[in-house]
Image (cartoon, rainbow, N blue to C red; front, side, top):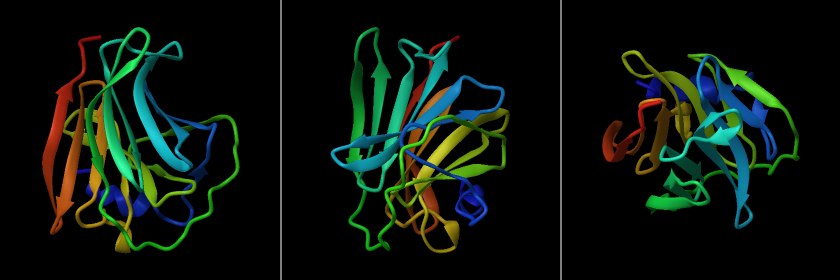
Length: 178
């Protein structure tokens, strides 16, 4: 599962993406951007075709403070799930500087999100289902206990909560057939 990649995604040689940059999962319609919400950086991931969010698909935004899943409509995105991340005692991080461009990731690789403790990794989420996952990286690159991890692929979006080294799915929706 994606958990094993969190350590690799948080490694010092891993690129850091900032506001204005896009991350693309190679060979897919999965894209993520670093956005700022209420002064905090988040990574927001969605299915896109020709640079436009796929209507009726599901998207997520995850940061140090919260995770949100929404359903993309023709003009707005409807919130389907929202939870606060646990209060964490983590070292402060630099907010980074706005940049532009796209970083393409392949399975087994990842990026760090500027201004957060979030890592974004590319993995086979389940057999034959390549996608991206995001979570708060703690000691040894593992997800912080009690925190949420979000996943997105062409097939589904899911949120799990990590506790005692185990994941429990707390939200999941299938993506529309493309």
